[in-house]
Image (cartoon, rainbow, N blue to C red; front, side):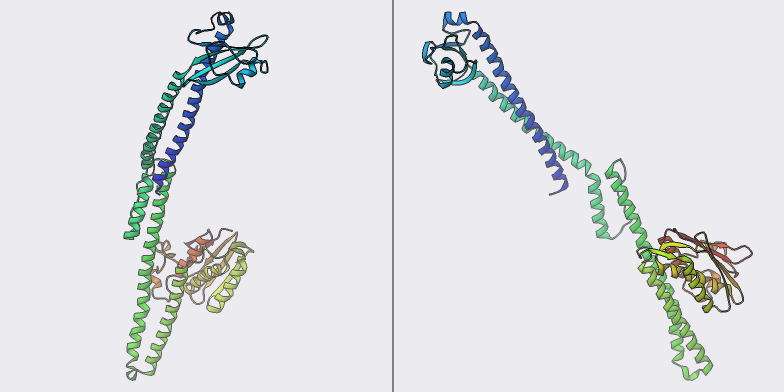
Amino acid sequence: MSLRLRLTLVAAVVVAAVVAAASVTTYFVMRHELYSQVDSQLAQHAQDRNAVFRGLSEFSGDYVTLVNPQGAYAAGTSVPIDSQVRGVARGADEHTLFRNATVQGLHIRQIVVPLAGGGAFIISRVVNYIDHDLRRLRLILLLVSLGGVGIAALAGALVSRATLAPVRHLTETAERIARTRDPSERVPEGGRGELARLGGSFNTMLAALDDAIETQRRFVADASHELRTPLTSIQTNIDVLKQQERLSPEARGKLYADLQREAHEMRALIGGLLELARNEHASAERTEVQLDDVVESAVDRARARYPEVSFEANLEPTTVKGAPEPLERAVWNLLENAGKWGGAGSTVEVTLREGELRVRDHGPGIAPQDREHVFDRFYRATDARSLPGSGLGLAIVREVAEAHGGTVVAEEAPGGGALLRLRLDS
């Protein structure tokens, strides 16, 4: 059952319940009012007992019957006498009694009044007209109820159609996107309320999905481009090695060294690609991490990797909440970048203070036009293209920083060189 049909049925059922309750209430109120008017007139006639006893006949359209103390008919219009009337006549019930009765197919309303010393008299009135009026009232209320339910169902259908129009547009758009696999389409936005917010949220989701798909496409294209270069070089070296009998031992050694270097770069590139593709930084379990210990361990590793570079560390005890392995990778990438650019005989200054890690080298620095791009995937500045690397190290640093609610920026260091600052949300 569709949501539109359910809303229409709910509106019809609610209105039907309300109209039915109102109709039943109206019917019984009118029925009570009609009988109350008759009872009031009968009571007024019963108070004029002199006229009653004088006539014992038709009294302004009413009929009078006298019952003796034994509960038997005595005079007046003959009407059925039952146990209730006998009880009043014998004095068992001293209260005035109103009741309905049927005489020769006529519906009558009666008042039974006890007499002092025993006996009673009955004043009767034919009330078939009340039955007729009540039947007409029932018919009118039934027609009104059916009309109200019909109008409510129609109004519910129109309202639900107008109200659910944004939902219908969302559904059609979602089905079209599923069919065409093109998330660039958007649903119309406008109005206020939850459905307008739903449309805005849906468009935001589509925009994020479109960006994610575009990022994936660029990632695949960039990865294919970056992998093509070392693969082409390896293929070229293999083709040359096929003619190794024409090569000198020195040339063959150089080719083997090139193959080893290209294989190492491919392994590093593929490792970086896998790490970026998994994107496990945001979902990794967070614990209390002693960041100064992580940096100190990475500095020791960098000193072993780049013995010709002096790494000077000034580390303040710092605790952050994060994923240990991604943080270690981010810190190592910063130090590896500084060691690679610092050059032999240079110094890399590593400072951890007030929750911020600063890595400063004394190399050529980063050109202004490259600073905003050095954290992009596969981006390599012109001066860096002659050096080994995949262009993924600093991209991983940025992803780790953002996953921890932090930032990383590249600046020109005072006196030359590059300064990279990593700040984490502790």
